[in-house]
Each structure stands twice: as structure tokens, then as C-alpha cells.
Image (cartoon, rainbow, N blue to C red; front, side, top):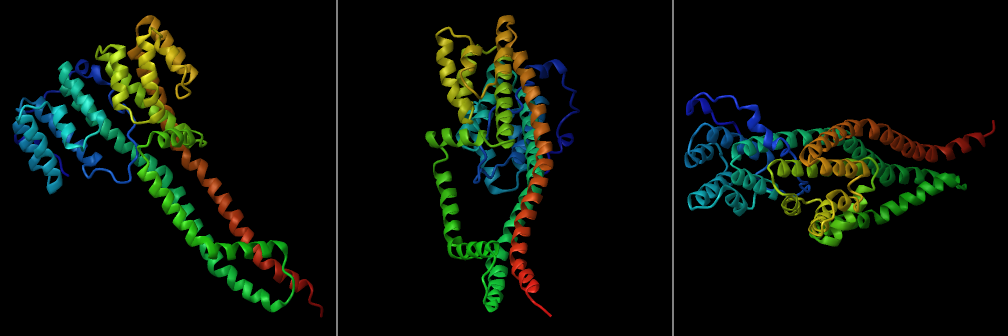
Length: 384
């Protein structure tokens, strides 16, 4: 979707002052947004364009109705236009922008609460700027993750395809040849042939089981027990579990930085985080942390009860509480986590590539050796 040609309808925009952007530098990636297989059609790219155009128009002095009229003209699809029209109508009828976004059902709690904070603090322009930055980084991060996993995924799918073909067609063909020898087969060859028989017999059941698991995961994705144990299992996966943890801790730190830098009381910040966060280990910890704060327990002591927050993080939070610099410490923790996420994402491909090559080489080599082993034995038994 092309951007609005602002120059045709607006005077030249003045550069934003650096101090006006300071309050929401931490808004970028607040809370985890669970990956969805069946997400909204109003995707991240469209949201990026929506927030970008809205921020430029509002900061240039255009009233909100005219701004939405201009934005509406920039959406071509009927579904997208309906969403923008609904937001516009709700605002005209007296709803706040955050309420209007919430009523569409197409915007996350992160976006709704971020806009609400902007409205209540008079920093809506800065919040819109940071939402633009958030979705820009989110799209960029998604591309990096796809880039890191696309090669291993393609190699893995190709490997499974090759193994399926060999087990389904090549091994049975060799088996027919071996039957003509009329002699006992080597143990390795017989083992591979037995696997081929099982593969042909049970492959359809394996496929149905995988399909059933996928359906069960989708149906129970909001179930508390499923979320608890699935995230616990996910975090134990080497490398990938660490990556998931760093991403979500980074977003938690960003949310706390935003709220605390906006002079939100610590208790209210934790309450808002509980509504905004979607990653179960952090979300479930917020309720206990809230109760602890009500009982006078320091934030760092309460956080130390949960493994999702490491010892270094809680130690820094303790120091920040003593010097009343929690927003700055959360900002530093966010930056450090982001750097670690970048490092892990960049190294996933280099780690997985040799592992996949070794796996494929060993498996395919094992099959080939087992198939040619009887022929080698037959040739050694031939006398001239």
C-alpha cells in the first residue's frame, strides 16, 4: 500500500524535537504477541502505514476527521477500508481513539494501551511515532527470523522428502533384488528393510497424528494449562528457548520503561503489564508481583521468585529501586536483551546448517551402505 503524498495536502513538516521523543523511547516492542497461524488481515505492514500516515497528518495540524478521510482513501481493499471507517465513526460518536481501536478487534492490547497512555499523558504524537518504529522493527525482526530459519527449514523438508522417497520406493526395489539372491541379508540391511515396511504401513497414521496434534494445539492455544506447560517446554529447547526468553524479557523491559518514564506508579505499571502481556511466564508473574507490591515487598524480591527473570536482572532492578532510576535500568536491560536477540538470530543459521548437513549425510549414507552391503558380500563370495 503506497503512502499518502503529504506534500499535496500539508505544509512542510517541521523536524521533531529530540526532547519530545524521549518519553516513549521504550515503546518499541513492549509485550509479546503470540505467533498466530490465522492472524488478522490487517497485517503489520498495513498498521505501519496506518500509524505513519496518522502521525504525520495529526502532527501537521489536520483535524482527526480529515486525517481519517485521507487515510481511508489510501486503503484499496474493502475489508481494510471498513476497519478504518469503523475507527473514524467511533471517534466521531465520542469514543477515544484507544476505545475505537479496541472495538474493531483488529488491534492488540499493546496498541490499545499505548494509544491510551498517549491520550492520558498528552503525548499521542510521540506514541504514534513509537508505534511506527515498533512495527518497522517488528517487520524487520520477522524478516530476519524468516531468513535465519528458511534455509534450515527448506533443507529439512528436502531431507524428509528424500528419506520418504528412498523408504517408499528405493528400498523396496532393492528388497526385490535381494530376494533373488536366496541368502541371508546383513543385519543392517534387514534393519533398514524392516523400517521401510513400518514406514509404508504406518506413515498415514503418523500424518494423521501430526494433524491431530496441530488441531489440538490450535483449539487449546488459550487454555491456561496448555500455555503453562507449552511455554515451559519451549523455554527448555536449546538456543531457540533462549531466543524466545530474550525476546519476551526485552519486550517486558520496554513496557516497564515506557510506563515508568511516563510517571506511572509502579503498581499501576504492573497492573497494565498484566493486561498487555501475552507470554504466559511473564503474564502469570504479574499477578503475584502485584500482590507482593501491595504487601510492601520490593519489586526485585518479587521478580526473583520467577526463573524467567535472571539473577543479574533482579540485581540491577534492586539497585534501580534504591536510587529511584527504574525506568533507566529497564531501558538498559531492554537494549542489552535486544543486542543478545540480534546475536542469537544471526547465529541460528550458522549453528543449524552443519547439524542438518551431518544429520542428512549420516542418514542417507546409512541407507545407501545398507543397500549395497549385500552386493559387496556377494561379490566377495564369487570365485573364478
